[in-house]
Each structure stands twice: as structure tokens, then as C-alpha cells.
Length: 520
Length: 67
Image (cartoon, rainbow over all chains, first blue to last red; front, side):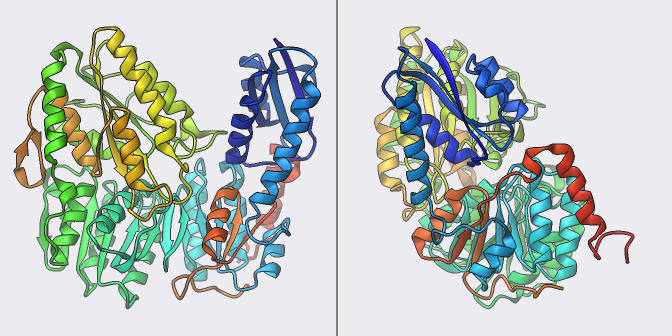
């Protein structure tokens, strides 16, 4: 084995481009292991830990790209470097991002596209607030995808935006759809009469996908970032979004999605909702106690999970209960077969999520069903069960989101299979623009391997997948479902239903369905 | 002050700063987008970047304490 580093001075590439380059390098002849990474101190430490840092890489700066590889036989270094350079150039031509010319600044971009009204910013978190501030100063609305942005910066940016009459969506805003234009991780859903403002990206995607599958489209879907309804931000951008949808002629019904808010933010949004003439469905996810009850008062309808939110919207629009809310005969029989064939001693649940809100929804649904008592999203199992949000900040520093990069989840899935207590793995697969082009192709080998590991150990492992997508998404939802099912996964479209199925398998009981129906 | 640009009036025209995959999507769908050739400021030096940010804020007429 021969470890080599090649440093490309002053060449910056984003984390997704680097992930693709790393994967392509690992497919080259004579390359045992490879990675392409920017030369920050943190990244150099990671390379050293992996045994991939050579002397030439140690002097790289954060603006330099380090190509690190381990050759199976010496003398192939030049061939690998030539191949990498060709791939970097062809990738740049392919990912043009507009015309061939790439301005170096937002001011330059405005000269190229004078009608621009939105800056979409997804640079590393430590630089994000600075770029957002520049965009607002230029009169641009902002969608700030980046996470790891300090709360005080969020408060300041939103105050600045409001004073300028602009939208500041985010930080950590993963999804928006404005007048049919998908921004960030967004699904190909039809235009329609439902307007949404959400402090949760994957929660927004789940609701619009369930609506699309039921034949309902959206006017706009605005993201505000997960902390907007905290006491510090106090619903600043949520209120702006609600006001805009209230005035929007295409929006007939308004949906608000968030984790339970701070008390002051709750009062502000409830007041805004009650004063709007349009029907409102407010989903404070996982809310318990008096606030958590499904209730209607005037034009405002309260829900506490994503599935219930979509069902409520459909009911208000006069639609019948859709098929995704129940189990078909095939899945029901498979669940019965899994329960009959598994040992009650090996039925703990392991959830591996890419969507933070989908993970959170599963957590409180499972808690309601008696799992994970008293826990948050923990690092250690509670009563054998464990849910992990792999899109959390602590897993994504310096690497792409798990909706794009499946390596961590595939590794975690195989590890879970080796745990003799685990009997059910819960996964989400989120389709749409920006997400991985073929998630099923990434996950299926890991699902097959995980089941093989369990089988070789005399156990049975159930894989339950919540497939969150729209029929028009570029990944071909039907094909994704077929591939995952063929690998042995049990696939449903409602994340809440997937969690209830996992509980039923874990407990060996029936699957509760929305509205109190129980079948399994 | 820069001209305010209305967001919901029509399909947005986007300046993308960061992950190119988002600009690729918009380009493929035929929506107007420009990709900025972004790289970390001050050569990625955190101390210099912080200093730069503070200088920018102190020259900003909207910054706290300057009104």
C-alpha cells in the first residue's frame, strides 16, 4: 500500500462535488482507498486518523483541495492524478449552474442576472451569516440552507430582513417551493391551493408529498428554519410567511408546521391565524397535554403529527381518506409473517433517519406506543430502542447531508444488524430535487447485507422504510419502491405509519391506523 | 439602499452561493440561476475572516450603535 497526496492549490469544491469525486476515485484501478477534501486543519486531522495524510498534504491551506489515495501497487500515481484532473474539469462543465461564466461575488452575479430576487446560500456554516448579510444588503431575499449558524446571527439577520421587507428563510432551511420553483431539497408536486410555512424541511416534504399523492397541489411552501419559533427568534419569519400566504390569492388554505413553539411565539402565530379569513391547519409536532389535542376553533385546526396534518387538509378540502393512510393486504400479510417468524427477545427498534423531523415524529409516535420512555434522541438505546437523526449538525460538519450521501447510514444499518437485540430497522428515504438520484440503489445492498448478517446469526431483521416522495419526482418513486421491496424492505409512504408498523413488529401486536382503526 | 425584490410575485430568479447541485436543478428545469464561484474568504483563515466581518459590520449603516 502506498499513500499519496496531491494538493491542488486554490481550488475550492463543495462537499457534494468532493463526495462524488471521492466515490469516482475509489472506482479507479489500483486505488484501494481515496478521498478528496479541502485542506482545513480539521480535515487534515481526519485524513491523519484515516492514515491518508502524506507530507505534501500537511502544508495544504483551507483553500487547497487535497486528493488523498492509497494505491494497491506503486507507480500509478500520475495516472490517478490525471484522471482526477479530468474529472474535476468535466464536472465543472457539467455543473454549470447557469451560463459558463461564474461571477466571483453576488454583486457580479447581479450584473449577470439583474432580475435576481433570491440568494440561495449553502456555504459552510461559519461563513453563512456573512454571505446572507451581503445578500440582504443587496436587496435580495435569502434562503439560507447552511446549518451551524449561531442563534444570535439568525436573530440579527431576520431583524435586518424584516426592516428591509425581505424574506430570510433559514438558517437550516432545507426546502422551499415558490411559484412552482423547487429550492433546496424539494419535491415535484403540482401547483394548487394549499400554502405552507414550515420550520421543518423534511416535515414540509412529507406533508406536500402526501397531499400530492392525494391529488392536491400547493401554492407556495416556505421554510423558515427550525429555530424560528424559539423564544429568541419568536416566530419572526413564520409571521411574515403567514402574512404573505394570507394575502396570496392562489392560497385557499394555510398550513403551519413546527416543533412545539416557545410560549410567546405560540401566542403570536395563533393570533395571526385567528385573524386570517382562511382555514388554518397548525401542526405543532409531538405536542403533548392540553395543547397536543386535535382540536378546531373557528378557522384554526390543531394537529400534532404530519400524517394527521395532511389528512386534516384533505378533509377540509372535501377529499376522501387516501390509500396511504392504511395498510394494503400485501403489507399486512408481510407484517404478520415477520411477527410470526421473529423471536420476541430480538425485536428492538433502530431508527436511522436522514430527515430530522421524520425522526422526531417517529420518536413521539413510538413514545405514545410505550417505547423510548422519557428519552430524547439519545446516543444509547432506551429499553433496547434507539432513533438517530443522521442529518443532525454533529453528523454533517464537512460532509454532505445524508439525503445525498448514504455512506454513514449504510454503515450504521450494517452495524445495527450485528446487534443481537435489534429486530426492526426504521429508515426514511426522501426523494425529490437535490436528493440522491437513486437512493434505493445505495440502500438496497446494505439492506440485503444487514438481513444476511441477522440470518447468519439465526435472527430475522425487518426493515421498514418510509418512502417520502411525489409520483413526479425525478427518481421515479414506483421504481424506488420496487427496488427497496425487492431487497426485502417493507415500504409505506407515511412516516407515522412506518413507526406504528415498527412498534407492532417490536411488540408482536396489531398496527394502529389513523382514526383508531387497528389492523395488523 | 438597494432595491427591494419581491419574492412571491412570480418564479424566483436565483443567485446560488454554495452547493452546485441546487443550481443544476434550476438550470435543468429552465429557471433563471447564476452560480457564484464562492470560496472561503481570507484564504480560509478564521482569524482574518472574523476581522473582515467585524470591519464590514462597523461600516454598515444598519449596524447597531451607528444610527
